Image (cartoon, rainbow, N blue to C red):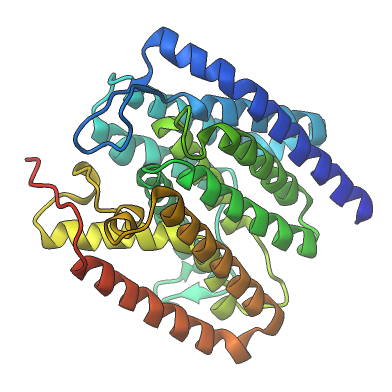
Length: 354
């Protein structure tokens, strides 16, 4: 175990150094090829910002994994590698304005989810049982359906989470850190290495992306981190926990992007807007700023919420069913209360974009 932890620590360090080194080069490359996000009324930055940070994160993670994962283990990483490459490329094309913005949601994200499921990346909540015994449906089919929704939902959530300096990369780092801790405790070597590499790559990029940001992730980077976060969380295994409890762990670890997406979706539907086609300053962090926090303070609040979600997930792992009802009740009550409060509080409302 000590040897494995040392290897993962080296993988994290290598990814951090690689991302910190690759990011300035990606910044220069973005300016050269016009991959920049121009200022606008719904943007927070006042000058054109390069949006090729995802490429640096991708290269850093691949570099680290290629060094610290053996050749025979790489076959198990193939699906993640292919799906991640697809997410990055489609996102970069979207950043360049070469694709309709709905292509990533309607085609790329579902296709990436299918690739992951086809390469054995799925939940095992219903796998041992038969759903609707009269019809003879195996539980695995329900696992596939849940996994598909999970992958598409989390990738989409991260895609719209990248709206404030350091937010998306920081939350990805928190998710990777907790995923690594669970994988290490359960002896999941490959999941642990992937989480360690993602943690290092996210932190290395965050060095350049924290406020005031000098480069953005771009849609390619946000989709990439969302895909990896979804994969890490769904591949965690808790053999000593009942499926009726273990399914809560990934949700708690990814509490921030799930809450933010829920808030935006509910709020935009209430205003007659299309949730993923109506960009604006109505995300959780934007609303916290409207309430008087600085940008850094708003991001820090969401970091704290992400850490609290991970700690509550550990509480479930350590104590199981005796605390599950209390945790779910408390999180549900606080989340609904926060959603109502933020929706009623003043924030900048965008108009219809039909």
